[in-house]
Image (tube, rainbow, N blue to C red):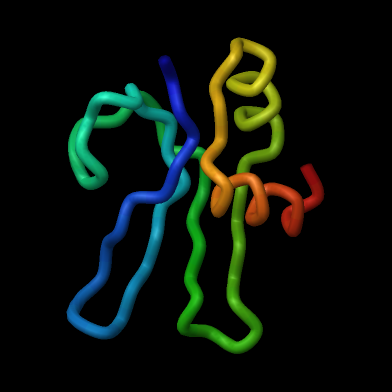
Length: 78
């Protein structure tokens, strides 16, 4: 199964996330299929950049977003 989820980047206490498409069996920071966007919670207000066309394409193909990814996509207007 293919999932849309977050992978963590950034240094200690300064998180930065990528919204990615990956196999559900892959580890959190492991291999991925495609990058859909980024999420920076450290900025005020938090910065969300998502390629809506790519995300729609993957959702049509049957990719299942995690709860957090789903909320971020809603905020981005998907």
